[in-house]
Image (tube, rainbow, N blue to C red; front, top):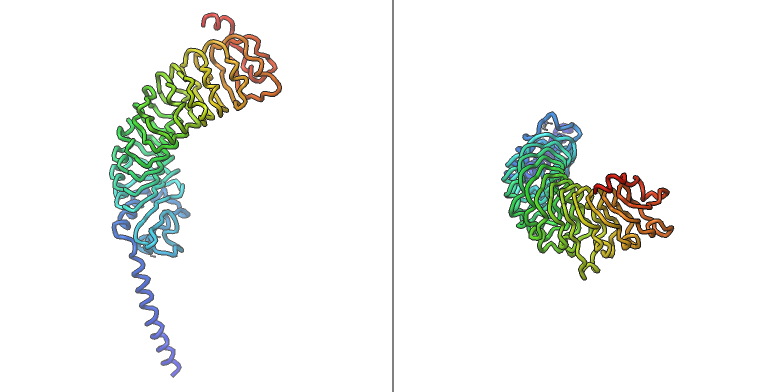
Length: 386
Ligand SMILES: *[C@@H]1O[C@H](CO)[C@@H](O)[C@H](O)[C@H]1NC(C)=O
């Protein structure tokens, strides 16, 4: 009797459990088949030897679990996020585990993706053209990988993109001409690639532009920056930009930091303008260019300016007294030019606490006890020649 009772309990339990298991089984296939196919293709393009056992990708086991099913105990523990109904993948954000491989063109099937972040890994090959199908993509972060080839022109059709970070890769060739059609883009970082050619017209929504350490060339054109009313940061150092820095650039309405160091600029034409009174400009770096002429004195009229570098250019003439009296200025680098005359004494008064350098010029009477006068001035013979 007891045995029969216990076996009927067992059967009863089975009747409860089987539908539960079947239900779980149903839950297993919530994720859309095309997303599953895309994730499988994504993982199989990563070299197995580059997937450490402790990494996110190691937990992606398609025969054991559905990618979007929750709770995530043993499988798909990280690397993806899904929509609330667990049918679509919305974020692919990998850990920096050193994954090496290519980015599959099938990534385009993840059509609900808003974030693609593969930063700090070793992905290589080209960025697939098909990426343009990810029409809801807001964040594209492939920073610090080894992607090469050009920035696909199809990227410009991603109208939802707010942030692009492709810095520290090996992308080459020119920037897409219609970059400005990225009508939601606020942050663009393409620094430390091998991009070349001119800067095209930029999206008017930009807040931060960083393209340091490339081979961009040509003059800075007003057309490229037209209407960029929110732009706060320009990082374009270590390129091959040439020509004149025209007044409009420092007069962009929201601009705070401009770094154009290590380029081939030959003039800095910085005009005084009534709008300077409202400027939030705090830092300007024009060091290591080939700028000739006098120090643009109108720079001193920017009310917030706190750091200025004009070091290692070909500037001549005296140091305008306006800079020595400027209360906001904390760092001033004028070294490595051909500046002459006596530096304004206010630089060396007890009240002013400047850091920086006036050294390696043709100045007279720069007091040797002042840190500002290090390194020493150029030899007289060189100054006479110049
Ligand atoms: C994936 O899960 C299945 C079923 O749980 C298991 O047999 C298989 O070994 C797992 N594969 C890996 C690579 O862990």
